[in-house]
Length: 59
Image (tube, rainbow, N blue to C red; front, side, top):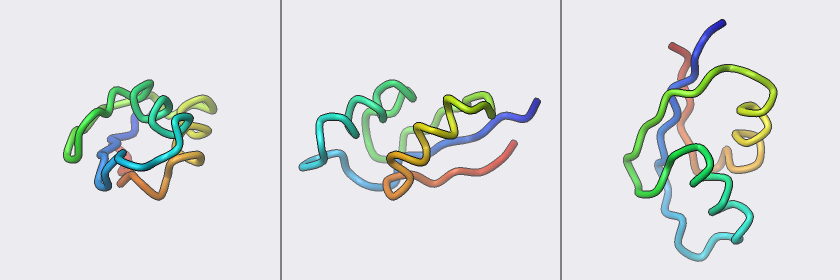
């Protein structure tokens, strides 16, 4: 199974609390933070919710 490299490219300031919680559940706290997550349905759902804040690449 492939992994996804996820990078936070936009600020969390002023966003919905639900979106901030989703970013933190992915391990993203500040602009420029990157994390590697498994490519599964749960991760894809989180990306779909806050995709406008992220840059996603496959590894």
